[in-house]
Length: 368
Image (spheres, rainbow, N blue to C red):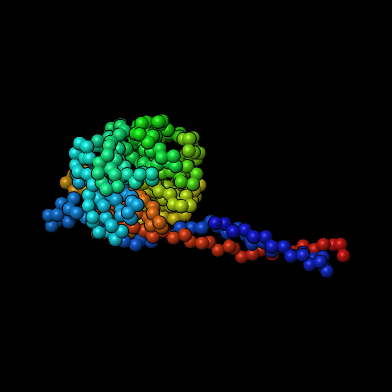
């Protein structure tokens, strides 16, 4: 929060006035610090396969339930939502692989219905949203999303969130729109279209909604920018461009907001998280890409390859092979280390800015 003070002192006996003005301080900043990791990659050299309890693959959806447990989507053939306690101990899995009721084929984002506590899971290859009760019992599926199109690596339902009325918003990655569903799963409206102009998308990935203003924040993946809309879906502003500098992106995916509407973006290919204030002003960045012994960036695994992990792994804190899923909860940011089979937990702290040194302005009244 900026600070501005004016202090005036009048000296009547001499008609001398001294004005002391302290210049406006810069806005508060954000600090991110590694705290712990949840989940781990399977030990493939020792014959362990992905899906062993506690192992993860491409964790894109992350959420903290009302029970305080951490829910993480586990893909690449594992096809379930895995549940960990607050200390990272594995508890159970929800769902199984397939296309039937209660089954999932590539789980994506995860969100909790604030009214019921039900778990909503983006079911990528089944092109739908699956709903489970808080205990993990299947309730229903709804929705339909466009399939893979040339030139894009992903498809299906992307980022998801509820608004304050309980309506459910989800990006349709290939159709380049946001779909809005009512409480019964009926499609109410769509927002956006395909293109590069304001209000248009090429691969809308992550989505979040401010609980303070109702504004909608979307990562426009292939346009390498963030777009912001009002609660009615009218375009407000955008920020970001392609690149590796501050405020630039290489295919941003996940997006989160904290209680002050600071914006956290999973800058996927740059393997980092960037943080902005609500207007898109850069605050900080955290993370670096995994590298091999020669110092080269480790590439992601082949989509149809035998392993969901980059080779080699670099499991040092703050090192990622793509950032994808994000979730903010009570001062912690959960970041999906996409191709390293874990979620890194970062502590979020606000860094208060100090006001600058005061400036003194003297003025004299010539009337004695």
